[in-house]
Length: 384
Image 1 (cartoon, one colour):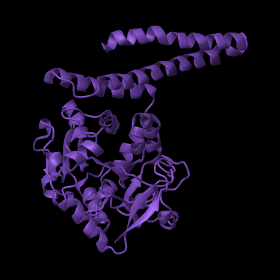
Image 2 (cartoon, helix red, strand yellow; image 1 turned 90 degrees about the vertical axis):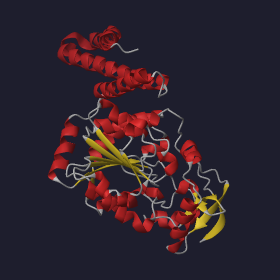
Image 3 (cartoon, one colour; image 1 turned 120 degrees about the vertical axis):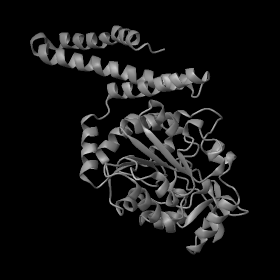
Image 4 (cartoon, one colour; image 1 turned 180 degrees about the vertical axis):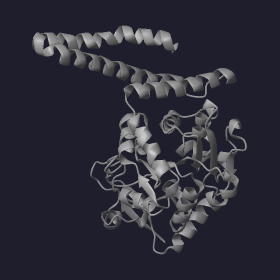
């Protein structure tokens, strides 16, 4: 393992402005053992890490976690297991409905010390490879891992994926966030190549052998990430364990949620087990795929649960202004879509008889329907 001087590419993509940087050059597989030991022994995953990298604020869940919970709720989970759940923000939000069984696995003591009281007894403080007995026989039907796999030792990645698959039910879906480099056919290019030193492995679709240095004494890679790899490589790792990428449904989720996620979080995947129950579950979700109306209902229902919990606690647990704005955005889009559908239906029925001028007026009338309908819906929903 060596520290070398380098610089970012200067192609205008993301952070690529040509500035200097130090890289860790991996020269032997044992280098990963040293780096992982440096991370754990130094207490890198301390309270400051979660505040800086995860945006933790005492007693507050981030809007990004709210959106991830909404997305997971669309998958209609009965039981959720989150690998590397931190203090459990997403699990806390999912459990507010009183129906979804939630559990998590977290290694960091600093994160566990901040866990939501509602999750007491539901988070295993240790390694996923040790959690099989704790998770019980029923197993989760939905598995989450948000920015976790890249922190794992590359030599044990297969063990972790297999353990997660084996814990899950036959109908299980897997929702993963991963900083995957290069273009992806579903979510595009979220993380472009940053260093020339990694170009050969990038173009070969292999994990990189140069990691960005964050700390020098001891050497720790940026964000604690031990695996930097192209998107197609990550997909192949999960497929090796029998998982199938659900591309059509994943694309539908990207189309509706990407605007509400941090740019880094747009690199997400949806997989299923290769089984008849999982295939049937996906087919049912595709029949009810997200549209403006269902997106409005989904975000509104989840925000109402948050409001109820806030009332019970007597304090805020989310940025309510932003949460309301998300609900309002989808209400407006739903009403606009309804107006367009109405105008299109009337125009298609009467347009050939009435001519283009009248058809255009019908379109305007369809849009005008949205305003009183919006007021009516507000009265029905009691939404603030």
